[in-house]
Length: 365
Ligand code: ADP
Ligand code: MG
Image 1 (tube, protein in one colour):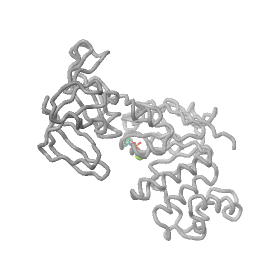
Image 2 (spheres, protein in one colour; image 1 turned 120 degrees about the vertical axis):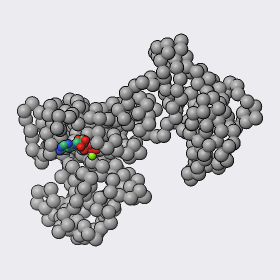
Image 3 (spheres, protein in one colour; image 1 turned 180 degrees about the vertical axis):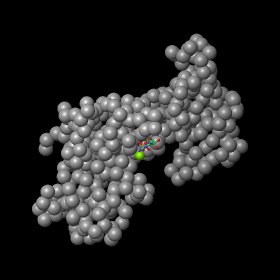
Image 4 (cartoon, helix red, strand yellow; image 1 turned 90 degrees about the vertical axis):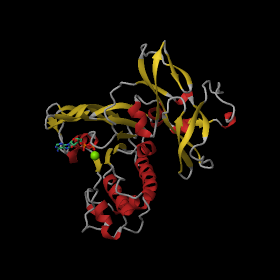
């Protein structure tokens, strides 16, 4: 199978009403890879995708497929000539065409000339035998799969997908995401997928580009982005977080959990230590023993359970800390559901803490 071309977005901007809704986005989708453009609603994801598709035009910058400029430098190749497949949020099928005719729509020779390809694709998304069915006879998930194979039928080298799973209910969605991903990989398609859901991005992406107010703020493999967020907002985008505040002095910051090394922060600078709830631990060994050093080179801190909620696999427990009356959240195995008012000692995984300057502009994420 030939390797699909690389997609390159080179310094794209898009002004609307005197505002840069896309403000210098550069991004590459490597051949055969899934890159997710992830960010909150309104940050410019769809606009970027529409520019790549050619249904909108950038104010400046270029789009390249392989070595070929498809848009930019005063040139604009029509969308249908870019070798790009599209699957948008509202992936309406043609209601008056059968499933088979829908899938064959973009193929020379229609269904008659491409029956084998259409049957093969339908089989691969478990829609064998649906070729003569009409869209209104299908469930939402089945329609979504028809739309997917319709977009893939002409073998586009690059697929653009804009929140393609957002219309599906939760139970269907994971299954359809997985099927979609395997089909895209089998077809060796390069994919640029837009989503505002971090779970979807982590499930689907080889590479995530995190976008905020028209800019890409961080890019990398899901594991990297989750474990090395560039700032507090990037950490908060993927999960609930706790923020422990302090002042750095002599590259050390006092916290309820002992001193943290905070090199690179000026004397007197406010810092934020960010930790996800699953990395805050209840120190069961310490109960009744009081404060002191812990095995994890920190100090245990006491908090009073303010609320505890059973969530199925785990419980979410909120603590009011003795040290400064701040509120911290911990997720613990659901076998444990402490009563409000219970005092408990907590420790945190220091290797999972992120230290950021407190005054960093976070773009309102
Ligand atoms: P996202 O897909 O990340 O939710 P969009 O790219 O759709 O965001 O929109 C980004 C911003 O650009 C939004 O504030 C939106 O209102 C604005 N916008 C999008 N299209 C237009 C348009 N045609 N005219 C004016 N503003 C637009
Ligand atoms: Mg959008």
